[in-house]
Length: 99
Image 1 (tube, rainbow, N blue to C red):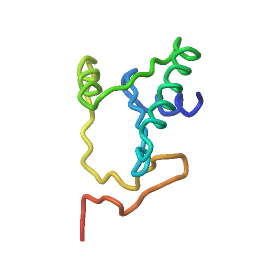
Image 2: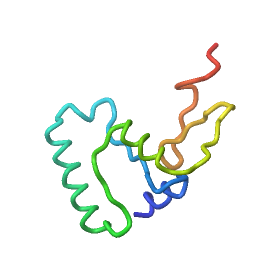
Image 3: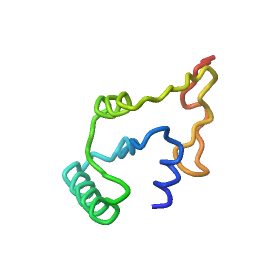
Image 4: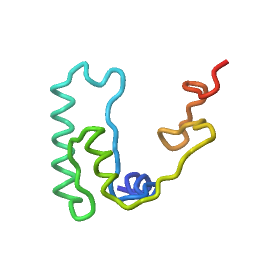
């Protein structure tokens, strides 16, 4: 739970987006979704006092954020380097200043 607590600390609301999957995740989609179903059930049963996990869509997440009275910051500088895991950085994969 420490990783999720660390991630949640960077959000301005109590709605936290947790993404799953990558390029090859869905090659056996039924097994993947069964594993996600099991994880969601386990987390809600054992950590439901702090977190509630569910499948969602990007529009559901944006709608949840809109219900909060938060002044969202605007980012004007570059996004990179980007980190998707502790000590794992992406540079040059995307850029706002292509050569």
